[in-house]
Image (cartoon, rainbow, N blue to C red; front, top):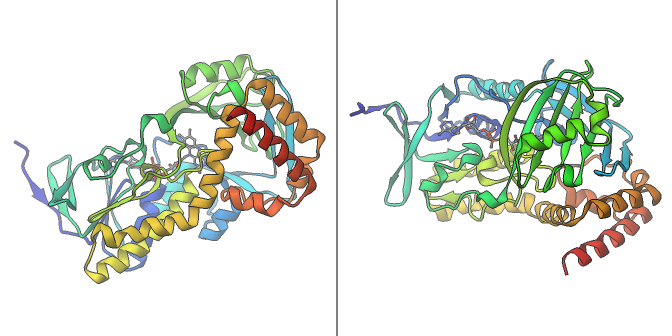
Amino acid sequence: MMQQKSQQSPNAIVIGAGPAGSYTALRLATLGIETNVYEEHAKIGLPSHCAGHLSIRSLKKIGYYPLPKGIIENTFDAANFYSPLGTQFSIHLKKPVTCALNRAKFDQYIANQAQQAGAVFHLGHTVQSLQIEHDYVKGVNLKDGTQVSSKITLDAEGISSRLLRQTRLRGITEKSLVYAVEAEIDKVHDVELHSVEVYMGSSAPGFYGWLIPRPDGTAKLGLAVSHGNPQTYLRYLMTKHPVAKRQVKGAKIVQANYHAIPLTGPIDRTYDNGFLAVGDVASQVKPTTGGGVIFSLTCGEIAANVVKSTIELGDVSAKTLSVYQKRCNKTLSFDISFMLRLRQFLNSLSDKRLDSVLRFCNRFGVAEALADVEEIDYQGQMLLHVATKPAVISALGYFGLLYLFANP
Ligand SMILES: Cc1cc2nc3c(=O)[nH]c(=O)nc-3n(C[C@H](O)[C@H](O)[C@H](O)COP(=O)(O)OP(=O)(O)OC[C@H]3O[C@@H](n4cnc5c(N)ncnc54)[C@H](O)[C@@H]3O)c2cc1C
């Protein structure tokens, strides 16, 4: 039988040192809350499964732009979208709006900040299960047999949702996932180095493919699919796609990682007695692009503030913690519901229809109407910002009709 050990009880336990976990720990420690973080891997950020493509505006709001040398790999002021038939629609923005981060270095940076603020990280420590008494989460049991109690446990374990399912919450369902591959390739041709390439339609059913170049000519190439094997689609993209095959001709895959992305918006409930869920485990992810980093950090900050006040109150019941979900919804739900509809619309298009949508965008000057867009995370608000422009009004009317015909 495994010997039981116990560690000193912190006020808060964070499970997982991805961006959600480490940033939540940073905010908790900054608020003076004793926090332990448990991460199963020995090194933070590795293996990395993420393209690290983020909005500069959102990073600035959080205080993460600029970042120390080596974390930001490139910035982008343009994007090219391709239908599987090869039609191209390009947007050129007035200034760089997105950047690509080295995710491992970014995760390590946040974790270092959290440690400096006083959070205690236990790397190479897997949380085996939650301690639950009378429907209250009271701490965690580690794989090595150690038991750690806490006033509150914050679950940032990512998409697996294994621990979350021990509570009364419902985790991410398989139906809400797309399956992704993120590859490092050694060279690209004929791409603008400050432009992101996006391959839409049946090249990556249910999502899209991406090529994110670096100034040294290497790139991140990836895609996600709602069904089928992402590896097969990646091979197709590299050898058969009318545009991508030229751009990656002769390129070698140096490394590839596989991971899933939840796309159906936040789970129904993110709090229980003594427990909050933050980040991918709560599906706090953009349904259009699968981007989850900014929303994770945003919800991590909300979680820390709620934990502070509930600990002060001496009441960590689900009822008191429910304010976490209310605040997250207030911040995200308008944009998430818009993005869910947009995702549904994109998924409903046949390749031929998608091709005609891109040609419509070219013909009616949609790119020019979007040239001063800066907001790409809060896409509902972004649409409100441009919705009075004639080209956007025409596009919305046209897309609305297509949507109605596709979803009678
Ligand atoms: C291919 C791909 C590309 C992506 N590209 C982008 C992008 O360009 N921009 C963007 O914003 N988002 C992107 N995302 C999404 C982004 O990666 C996630 O939203 C983000 O990583 C979520 O952070 P997290 O901390 O919630 O989860 P994770 O980053 O998954 O971190 C969870 C951590 O918890 C640890 N853990 C799990 N279980 C336990 C346990 N029992 N005990 C201890 N530790 C545990 C894990 O090892 C991991 O370190 C992409 C995702 C994929 C798959």
